[in-house]
Length: 283
Ligand SMILES: [Fe+2]
Ligand SMILES: [Fe+2]
Image 1 (cartoon, rainbow, N blue to C red):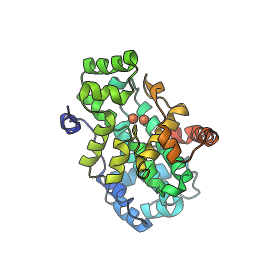
Image 2 (cartoon, protein in one colour; image 1 turned 135 degrees about the horizontal axis):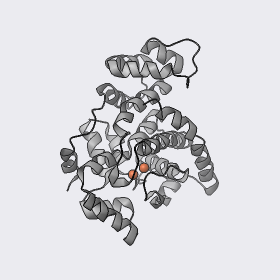
Image 3 (cartoon, protein in one colour; image 1 turned 135 degrees about the vertical axis):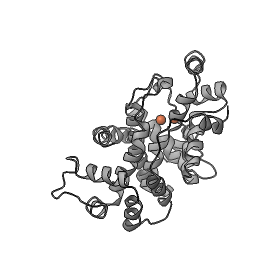
């Protein structure tokens, strides 16, 4: 099967807010203004209502209740608002059990949020790559979204074959998926995001998060790869094959990380667990 065939087969993916998709496209611009963010969010009533409820939750501990999107952006700043909106928009799609991955409901979601947080940490650390933090967050959030589509498109027997390939032949998950299906969750994820018209750089990062592109210059997939590895190393382990994560030495070199810095990043990501749990309750 090809990735587009799998996407065509999947009928049950929850709809994603068009406003949130538009916002992800806007992130590509060099400087996105508060006003632009407000205008986009306001077009979606449901998203607006959820955003206001989230802003008024005890997590943010605001003195005054927030009554409008404009106020929310002013009080929390646009980076925080983007976090909330993306979390709300994609969370409902991801909080589902994925039987093919032995991943419980919420587990993929927790892993995705932790990877999003890790991606921001890696991007901030790798200043030379010049990656906007909200773009890094988005990529982390969406990197494994192909698992949603795959788990709905393939039968339990096929899932069993993939598992056997990993357990008995020591394949990495993406290798096993490619051998049995002809495509893998990274490619399927990028194909799904393409059908949502998301920007090319985000597709690249999702498509290559297990095989980051480091030459001739490191691409966004290097950040996605390292963030995913850090989320695993920090203990977010979705599914029975979670141990199978392999850190690409070329990505480590591209990010100029040594052992000590890598360990420091794992500690930073681990300390984000609590924040991630709070965010999960928001979606
Ligand atoms: Fe993955
Ligand atoms: Fe992952």
